[in-house]
Length: 323
Ligand code: 8YV
Image (cartoon, rainbow, N blue to C red; front, side, top):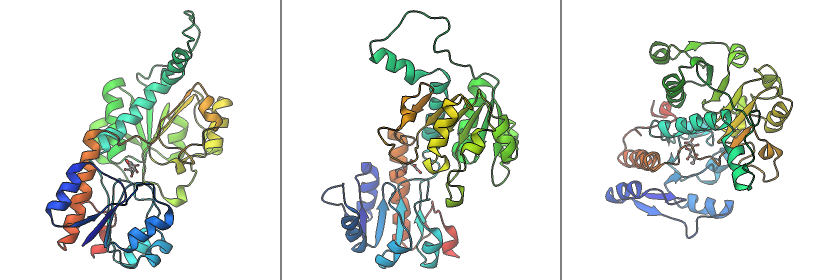
């Protein structure tokens, strides 16, 4: 069975696949054009996918030989799951192993924005330390404030837990279903979407992205948020309309924003949001720790090995494929 891996992943994953006797195909160079990438896919049985390549109807039509895809990510919005199901193609993902790292980045962004860390760091880099000014660049404290989580799954839970422990924040959340563990352990309260946006001092997005949620956070939402509120997105850039976010920030409808994901991604170098002092943008590094990336490599390899043994993938985004 031929496994195409488009980018080097941590050695542990490669080792596991090799020890299982699988044939691994790496591209000659990692910056493939779409056509070059497609050719590699056409010659493979299984793909271990790193990055956001789209797996849509067109892809599946052009690569009829593909039998399974193991994503090197927890998010699976890049895959048309219905198409995969029709063709009985299991889609593996990497949940759990990156929850801590990704929620750490949400927590970091929240604090960075609340205390204006990137703005102040830029001042230091610009040789503009400045005189002590009792009124300049003041941040805000997070103790006892309300954290709203949109999408309280594994990553959202870890973010809520950190905020509870560090700042005794009140946790409210909006989700497809109730999260009983969060309600019991963190006192989290389920609220409607309208209540979530109106009551949050920090609103952090952690849901799985679906096409129908495209730009859910837009001007009509930012308008209803508190003027002291901080918007955090570490999930997918598609959740927010970036021009609307920019306008909400300059019109002081909200107080600040921390983004690990942008719309579009990568961010355009001349995006005016980058000029704002109450914004911190990171280049999608939520899972970028040694521990998380090793875990992701291991989970992806486990998925492929299980598939090669005609077993169910242990971390599967479309378990219905096995019914
Ligand atoms: C991945 C992510 O590193 O897991 C996800 O869904 O967004 C990141 O952790 C990135 O998508 C690369 O595949």
